[in-house]
Amino acid sequence: MDVIKKTLCIVFVSLGFISFAQQDSTQVYKKKVLETLEIDLLLGYYEQEGTHASVTGGIGNEDLQNTAPSVVVRIPLNEDDVLTADVGMSAYTSASSSNGNPFNTAASSGSGMAQSGNGDGSGGGNGPKGTPWVASSGASRKDVLTSINVSYVHATDDRNRYWSSNVGASFEYDYQSFGFGGGFTQLWNEKNTELSLKAQVYLDQWKPIIPTEIHEFDLFGENFLTNNQSYFSGVSILDENGNSVASYLPSNYSPIDDVNRNTYAVSLEFSQVLSKRAQFSLFMDLVKQQGWLANPLQRVYFADQANFYIGNVRSIVNYEDPSNTDVFHLADDIERLPRNRFKYPFGMRLNYYVNEYLVLRSYVRRYTDDWGVNSNTVQLELPIKFNLNWKLTPSYRYYDQTAADYFAPYDQHLSSQAFYTSDYDLSAFSSHQIGGALVYTDVLSKYSLWKLSLKNISIRFQNYRRSDGLSAFSIATGFSFVLD
Amino acid sequence: MMKELFTHLKTFKLKKIKSFLILLVVLISSSSCVAVKNYNKVFLNDPDMALKSPLAERFETTFHIYREAAAGANGGKTGGGCGCN
Image 1 (tube, helix red, strand yellow):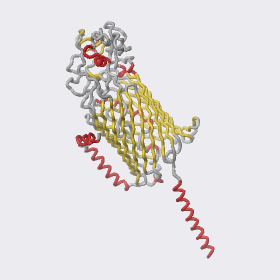
Image 2: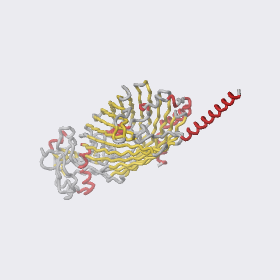
Image 3: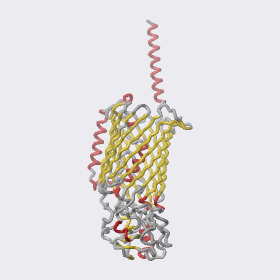
Image 4: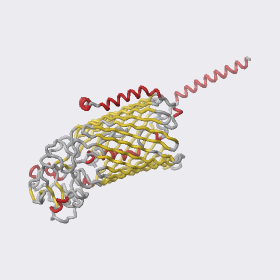
């Protein structure tokens, strides 16, 4: 009996030590927020076609190609902290923006605005010609955006709180943007409920490029047609009937007095687990923008002012037809929009795990702003897993919006208006996007590059159709690696 | 800045924002009703169940911001950049 008592005593004391030791080891051991360094290499290509170029006042060639490589590196600094660096480029060529200067020849010895252009020199003399329907070879036809964003996330020991901060910048030829922000995330209810609050500030600045004819007016004033230094010196300007006149004057134009554009955003996100197979999140942003919110390169034409052209007189009657290759309508002004814009989008995501082969992902958004734009977005994705390695995700997205209060098509604005734009991105339209993604996951890390093991390869493709005729195609590839 | 923000809130009578906040309070207060244990989160931990967009979707989000007037409420970028090409 004593032996049994002693044995039980030893067992209970040992269990006590074991349980104490386990508690202690639990306190010491912390799972890393990020186990090892991760690298994502991404490459995106986008192209579009359309007939509502905003640089030429709402009509014209909208062809655009964009290639965007980027690298995202996530570095675990310790068990609790992760540093992420996101570096990218985006290079585009655009028919629309090329027509900031649409003219095919340097007209005079003037200010050197016009370098070369699109015309073939046929029909209508040797003066400069242009058209909104053909891309120009002007300097603004292409640009490269470079961007860098660095973010830092800190998690508390219990992984129920996360603090984050970020800083970033992007640069283009005519635009630069600096951004910074911070956020806080709280989880509770056994990590079934999550609430995030983020704040973000962007301090942007234009280096304005304005259309050639407006630029010369800005530079030389009311005598810009006769000034020897002006691009238009000696150039024949035509009225609607083809008569050579000297009365063209974009008198509504006033210089851009503030090149800044600031954005202040507050984002609130709430996530909740609904069951073992379902979870959802709600998003709400409050976004305030102020500064020069219009694009200085975009032309506007007034219905209540006479029209003036440069180029082939015989093509004026066909101006709005793509067959016009050699006459260009001179702008009445550049786009003007209010100095403030307040946006408040509200969105929801709901994901449901159907079975080991299928997941249903859904997203809806309602957007409203104080420019009169209301929009709805619905997106559905169906990731289908064929096996551990291969997954196909077909997707569909519907979008619609009402027009901004300041939008009107080509040559329909009135000069008495305070604000005007013919940018069809602010018009009323709906769009459909159909596409998918194919993902290969290297479960056993069979492939490696230097000390990096391949995690997965993905390719995404999307076909986009807008009800105003714009169509686009995008394809993106991604390679994810983890450090061995 | 804050003053203007509040002016906008008043001007727009942001019923939707109020509704959202009320909904949020209700959801937070009722959230303890659902508590799936960590060991039962196998399905929820599937990468496709993440309540955010895949990284490669950023290119689509960018062209949506450029070609559409609406932006935000998707966990992505809400501003910055001219979106002018």
